[in-house]
Length: 447
Ligand code: MV4
Image 1 (cartoon, rainbow, N blue to C red):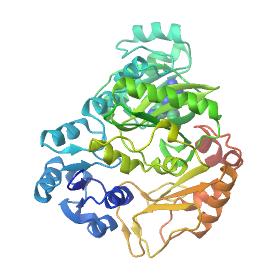
Image 2 (cartoon, rainbow, N blue to C red):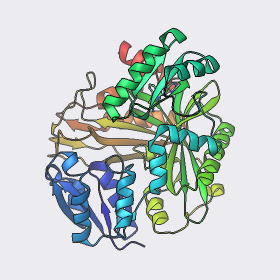
Image 3 (cartoon, helix red, strand yellow):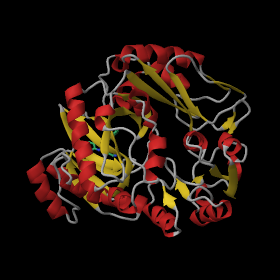
Image 4 (cartoon, rainbow, N blue to C red):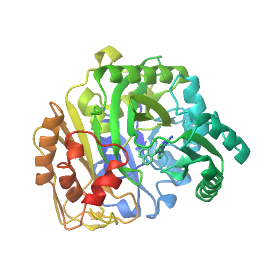
């Protein structure tokens, strides 16, 4: 096992990794910016190293500063957490080149999945069902038109380097393809410096369902079921649940089996998430995330698996501590992302929290770095707490969530708590009938 793990993250994520380190009895180091000097992870870690000023580019993304912190503290492994350097293949490679262990997948898998065209080719070769579309990148409008004839309309032009919905344009008919093609390429070039695009049939009302997979270095691969992540605003998830209210146990076993088999064929190592669009009973792979995800706790709640603990064990060469047959799905879990954002305008609301009280009681888990007197810095992601609820079934989970939201206090800054209080009573949440369009096009318009 590792002698010391260095955590290159902040906030509730650094805290989550730190907790796993402590339970494994591994000393930990947290790196931090000057803005996070008074944060909970810095207080709770065995050691901390300030690596730069507030801006992420100069601190949490500053690879030379991070390597210096590794050298100073004698850490032998690096955990990147979620976001920041967690899907940076170059960083994973540099860490390994320094004789250290990157707690995550191999650089080749991070790199392959970072390019959406390569990801789709890799996924297809591994047997995953794809959205009908171009077999690879599309370089000319003539080529795009030919594919449009085969695939049909509406057609979606997507950026190969895409993410967060940028560089994505719909062509309703063949007449609009030229326009969508140029616009997507221009947007991709501006956002990512790469104008490579590909085509997919546009799905109008899908759900976003993702499957958690985990693989060790001994050839064991297990799927941990799915998470339903359709409740999003501008590609930011707000509310996630597991299992998905749209799937039967048979569908879950089927897509889980397909995802696990693909993971095995890819020779993938560690934790990963395969994202699918689900429409009319069919799954279509769109992307794979080669890291732990923000919403991982809901999977932990229904399976009893500690994903961060397993990640660390796998990176140390240990086998998975369970088999597929050991995995049973118990009850229902929901995560609400509590952001320091105005609940109606979604403008960031950094500032001092003078009163903080986390909800508690049966089935309630809070992942947060908040404390009374903490100032939410303006430099980073606005997520300040995750409220994770576990119940015997979906209705029980929703009832617990409703009462937990009433207990939760974050004052005086406005947060998305107010939004979640309205959300739990929405009909489409109660009956689970929502899709990726519902929050923005129905709920936020009516409320
Ligand atoms: C799509 C789609 C419809 N059809 N692909 C958005 C970001 C990127 N990760 C994939 N996205 C989508 N791809 C096809 N062929 C609709 C979306 C999409 C979406 C997907 C998941 C969750 C929320 C979304 C919101 C808008 C659009």
